Length: 233
Figure 1 (cartoon, one colour):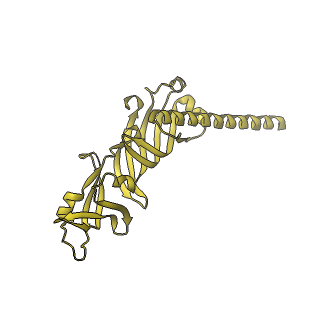
Figure 2 (cartoon, helix red, strand yellow):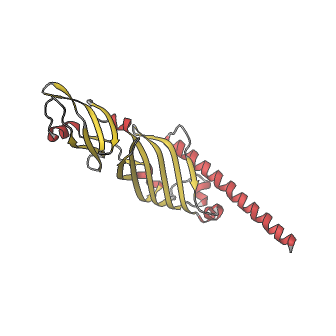
Figure 3 (cartoon, rainbow, N blue to C red):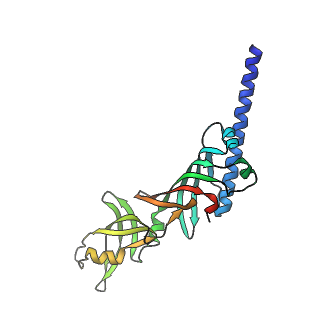
């Protein structure tokens, strides 16, 4: 009986080791393909959830797969700290072995990323000097010409998802008066300062759903449903 127990323990350890070796190999391969597909300078890290991995692989069904990249760029836009979580992934083992993606699907994909304020500023009018978070809200400072006079303009803005304009819309909601300078109306400032950051979607076709200011930039979330890899560009 003792010999049988030892045998079962050894077999169990071998299966666990084999399972972990398999999942590491699969994660590295997925990361390599993503880096190649999107032209990333560094390979993203990939985590395949659920246990055991080998059972999921043979069934072609995965509980969740998470992809993390320090930086991602597409169509001239760069974001940081990208996290993409896929749930309900269907990927037949034969297709993976043959590097075919036409039959790979995911029930849901949720992506989060950070758009640095320096990136946001790149799409702002030329008079904008800084964008930062504050207790009062997102703050924009700069100088704008009023009646030919450059006037410092501290303003509070809000950011919203605007599918009509195609991305993140930045709109002033209040303006602080300056000592001794011309009065600037909020209506005038909205015409001069409203701008759009053209971040329409993140990887896997995920569409923007929410934006929240943070200390380092705008935290964006995007969601996609019924993702078919064959439909992606």
